[in-house]
Image (cartoon, rainbow, N blue to C red; front, side, top):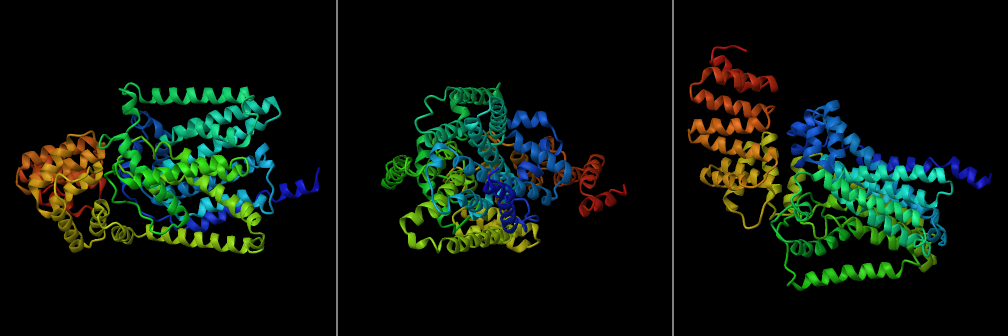
Length: 582
């Protein structure tokens, strides 16, 4: 056996170890990051997750079933202790970086990849994986627990591409069947993790066009695998939505607030913002004040769209000379197709949507830095390792710092409010975090400020959870009539059970404050019908029953509250007052 090959195999483990160390440096201190936003809906108040009800999970979220299954397993093992969830997210992030590293290695073995040489060619897979794993814009997908869906989809998506390349270059027919099975498995797991994996067949096609020049038209067996994969993914999507499938239009939109063309107009600008964050990751935030898309009559929208077309044309033109960077750019746009094109989603922008597409930028960027730049400027070759090392250390520091901010929800939301003073959701979350921290005066003051400065109905459509929290802010500010209008208007729309429960609580609390105890009791019972494990809701029901003189029923409600929350002082006090003891 060749001595160099033996040495390469001997040190094969070193690169994965470096990737693992990098991930640990950037994310090792995030095990105590609390729950944020959707975490409460997907984990804390999700009865299907808490009860490990796999049938309900499949019925409610078939195309995110793998992610919800992992959360349900986490809950069974760790309850609401966040460290276990974060450990899983960090491990998945490492495995995704490892999948990108292996994908780069496989691409360099292809006919197009072999034809390109350079002094740092062997470093490209490692640097691409390090940039991907250490980039601070990735923190939202990794540290924000419920965005595990994005990480899982990326892991299986990239793994499926690795399997396809292994299949494509396998010499042994027996090995081909093995890789066919692996490809099908990883593709199905990707699609069942998050909907953005639906672009996987196009990514496979992109691999063919980029790295097998002149041979893809004759590779009939591989085109057969791709065709079967496309049909299989389509059938799986259809079966997942039956019998609720009404029309293709309903399948490919999340909201009716704006049209497909309006959503696309917003995305052509937002994609440039995502690219800017990758090149200059300053100003990261969880929530953006972007809820209403622009019009195609605005000139800058056309400039943004033409800019993307120019970048894509440049990548296609340079595919023969530089297949790796061309593939990276085209992969970036392919991976964005589901969430950043013509499928309207309520929130126009979220950083975690760039998690998978950034794999393409990391791959192309590593190639440009290590192979192309030394060719263009040979004098910079000696400075390459030093400059690259400093850049990677800079990414480590930025990721560590961003994650440090995630650990303190008050500081986190204060930073978001500073960056997006017009955004409503960060202010509502900041008020809630003040309340949770016992800073009641600040919480009430901010709640009143939000209520007085935000009219109902709002000027732009609001995500359902934001509308529910705004109704709660009206309640806190004493604007009872506005709170009731907000609740009634929001309840007219299809809602998640957790959001509907919160709206019933707000309306029940308004009725309670206005001494309409019968109506308050009805709303609290409606909320408990959606989630019977909410101690605060049982306590509120007990108070409504207490006010009506229904002592026996109030006692039952208080005892339910104590069973779920043994240290509930109000429930204990009420039971003593009822003379029933504890």
